[in-house]
Image (cartoon, rainbow, N blue to C red):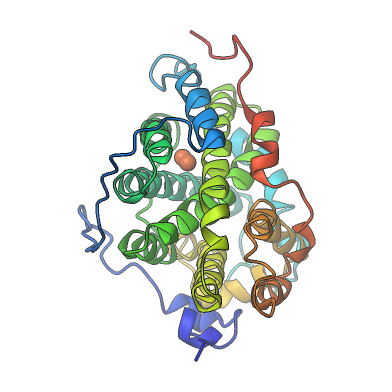
Length: 373
Ligand SMILES: [Fe+2]
Ligand SMILES: [Fe+2]
C-alpha cells in the first residue's frame, strides 16, 4: 500500500497551518545534533577513470573552478542591511501590508519601524537557513563519497565536499560580520536533512540533497543574486551558484541511469520521498520563527501571508529547477504519474519544460579570469 499525504507529511491538507506549526524547534540552544545512519561504505577496485565520461568531465571542470572564500571576495565591503532589505523586498514582492487587508490582525498597528525590523529578521533568518542547508550539503556529500559505488562519482563527490565547505564558510562569515543575528535551524529543514542523511540508500541521499535541496538553493540564490546590488553578497552568490549548478548536474547524471534499473515499487518510493521533501521545503519558507521573534503569533499571521498572491508566486518559483530535473530523471511521470499530480497540486508543474540542470550547468560556470585573485 502506498502512503497518502498524511502518512508522509503528518497532515491531510497541505495548507493546514496548525499542522505546519506543530513542527517546531524546541531546543534552540542545541549545539550538536546527532543523526544515526546505517549504510554500507563501498570500496571499488575498479579504478578505470572516465568510465562514466560525463561525471569525469564534471570532475575535471570542478578541479579548475575552485575559488577561495577567504581571499577571492571583497570582505572589506560595508553592508547597509536596511538597503539590502529594500532590494530583497523587490524579490519577495511588495510588503505584506500593501497586498492584504490587515485590519483586525496583530499587524494592523505596525508602522515603518516594525516593517523594517521584520525585513531585517527575515534576512537574518533566510541566510541562517542557507547556512544550515550548506552544512547539510557538506555532510551529505561526504556520505555520498563513501557510499556511491563508482570511482568517477567518488572523485567528483570529493570536489563537492570542498565546495560545500566554502559555502558554509561564506554564509557563516557573512552572517557574523555583515548582518545582525543568527537563527537556529528551522524544524522543517532539520527534519528534511535528517531524513536525507539517515536513509541507508545512497541514491536517496542524492535525490534529497543534489536534486531537491540544491535545486531549490540554485533557484533561491539566483533570485537574490539578480536583485542585490551589494557587491560582496552578489559575488559570493555568483561563485556559489557556479558550484551548485555542477552539484545538481551531478545528481541528474548519477541518478539517471540508476533509476532505469529500479522496479516500479522502488521508483514510487523515490517519488514519495521527492514530494515529502518538496512539502518540507515549502513549509520552512513560512519563516515561523521570524514571527515569533517579532512577538506575534505565527498562527495569526500565516493565513494572511498565505493569502498574498505575490508571495505564493515567489514560493512556487523556488521549484523551477526541481521540476525539470525530476522530469529528466523520469520520476515525474513514472508509474501512474503520481508525482506529476502532486506537483500540479503544489502549483509548480508549469516548470516541467524549463531547462534541466545537466543541460544548463555550463552556463553557470565562471569565465576565465572571473575569480578575483
Ligand atoms: Fe552549497
Ligand atoms: Fe551544493
